Length: 128
Image (cartoon, rainbow, N blue to C red):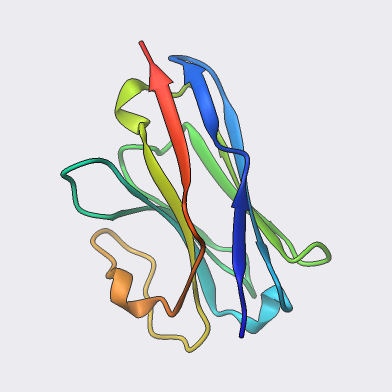
């Protein structure tokens, strides 16, 4: 069974940067797309950035557009999320998720239920 392992979280001050990594235990190109979700306390899980593995087309939520960049490295079976100009409202647990079936559409309001494989989550804390 495929596993996803996230790394790179931590605590930074507003304006700082972090890079999250999500490494798959099997071939990354066995997935249709991958998405970084985040969930803050008391809030619903939100898809903030996603990428189609085959073509590399990406999606960003309005809240992170221009600050976050998602990319993939097929040789390393890893998806990255580069987060720049971080804001306190970016504070959340970040999860990477894979759709290996092809159900998901990368768009605003995408459903977490379309993703069948999840990482354990990693904390990102941005202080003002």
